[in-house]
Length: 119
Image (cartoon, rainbow, N blue to C red; front, side):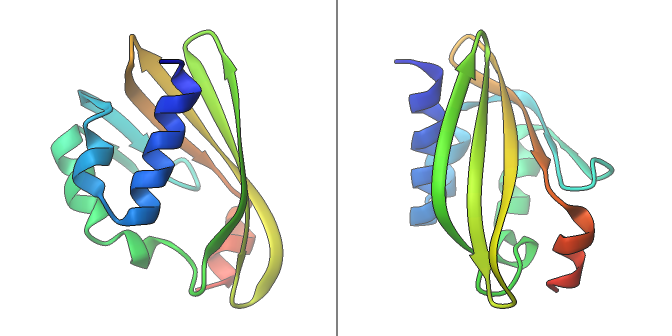
């Protein structure tokens, strides 16, 4: 299985609210770096607990309108086009770094000023 398929499987799990399936593709000592790059979660168990509040991390009405994967070496970047209640279009990217077929780092890149205004 190529790494882009693993990332897509994760996005599908998020869409279905199946966070237990999602975390199976992460290493135990994974790192999740949230928008703004200052908030960091360490460890798969901590990440899983945070996913219980996933809806609260997203702007009201958040909806992915298009999703593309770019794979190079042991990295996949998701280009995510999205909209929310107060914005018709925006985009963000998410970097996934792999050890073998497991994600050890997920890092979100967003326009943090725009993101904050939506809450």
